[in-house]
Structure formats: C-alpha cells, structure tokens
Length: 148
Image (cartoon, rainbow, N blue to C red; front, side):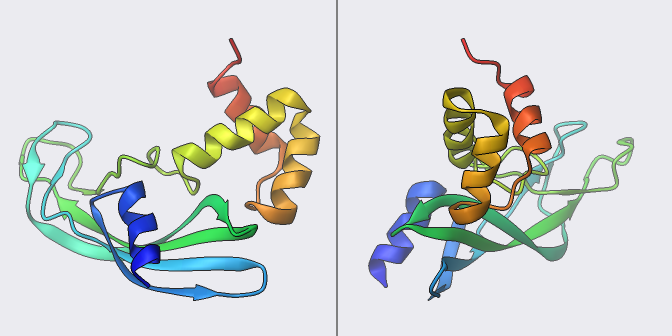
C-alpha cells in the first residue's frame, strides 16, 4: 500500500491517498485534497473559506498496463475579495490544467502518440488502454500544443 501512496505523492503533494482498487482493466486511486487555502483565479486573493467539496475523475498514465483513474475529492472556496465578480471557485492542482480530466503528463503522452501517428490512431489506442478520448479532443490537444 505504501507504494501506491508514493505514486500519488510523486504526482502532487497537495493530495492525500485514501485507498485504491485494482480491477482487471484499471487501477483506481481515491484521494482527497490537502489544500487549506486556494488562490482566486480572477483576482488572485487567497481564500481559506472552503465552500463545498466535489468529486473529480482524472485519468493518468497507465500503471501495470492498466488504465489509471484518480477519483479526487476536491474543494471549492469562496473568494475573500468582496469586489471580485467570482463568488466561488475550484482549487487548482499543479498536475492538471484547469477543467481537465487528464493529467498534464497523460496529455503529453497522448500528444507524442498523435504526432507520431495521427489523431485517429492516437484516439483509438487511448480508448483501448489509456483513457476515453476522441479524435476531436486529440486534435484540440495538438492545436493547443503544436509540434516544434
């Protein structure tokens, strides 16, 4: 079990391992956020006023040839700046782009596959063993990160 905790800690120190489940086709980690405060993405004000929590399902690089899923209990915070137009916001994590359901390192891996083959082949390969992603999403990933 310690090895599983280590895998999550290597990904991000702001999340805490709760448990895991290994199935025939996937490894699922359950984790909770350890952040006590977060920065408002609009005004930059730091807030410690936790509003609520919600579950995020995130895909990461495969482990042991199995799809890796992280079920993360994340928080929303109330902005402490009364003049800010954003009343509440979700905390951010260093290993994720805002609103993303895939880790940055998984996106990089998918981008490598797409550049070497095609968006269609990358999508097909990903759906079978990595994460559910369509060719349109792969195309957006390529547009956002054009190859050098």
